[in-house]
Amino acid sequence: MNASGEFLISAPPRTLFGLRVCDLGWTATLGLIEGLISLQGNRTTLAFLDARTALRQAIDAGYRDELRRGMLLPSGGRAFGFLMKALLERPVPIRFSVNTFVPALLTFLEKGRRIGIAGEDIDRIEALRDHFVRHAPWHDIVAIAPDQETGQHFDLVIVDAPRFAEERRIGRRLASVRAGLVVMAGAGLSGFIASKPARAAENAGMTSVEPSFA
Image 1 (cartoon, rainbow, N blue to C red):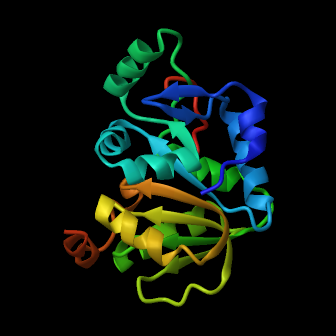
Image 2: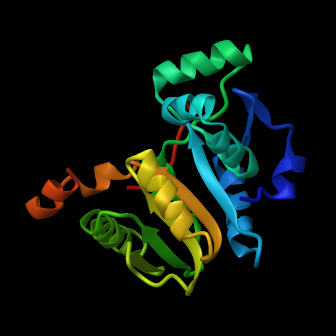
């Protein structure tokens, strides 16, 4: 994971749990990420710092190191927001939810990009692909199946991994994939597949004004 030097210089990043988080507004953050996607040979991993990731990094040193090498966006619900405010002792930074940020990013990217959606549940990633094809049809969006060859280049890869074990396996599988940006979405996109077919369902087992992309 590589974070852009532009981010590190643009503004003093805030620190939460010893991790630096992006302290920019919506437009600046989306613009920065568009720049990261455009960089050739400088892959960046983007993750969301919420209660789930905060707990894991506290007990998993390897995961904490991964977060430190990538780009982090503050996230989490209201309770996590109160915790962040208490730790920072100053106004809470803008928080980005996965289910709002990902569609907003796809809309913000006006130029057509090659986008992969990777996961271990083929029904989930195909449902997500279909949703985002409807949402942003100017992009070339494909599902990356678990057994698929990953030699091709992607501008952006979205990792759908409801469980940490899945996230780690997918991360290893995508290690050699050429991509400008990899977004670790966790289970944050589940709301977009609530109406998926019953077969797939069986298999599956911000405090600020935000863009209203759906």
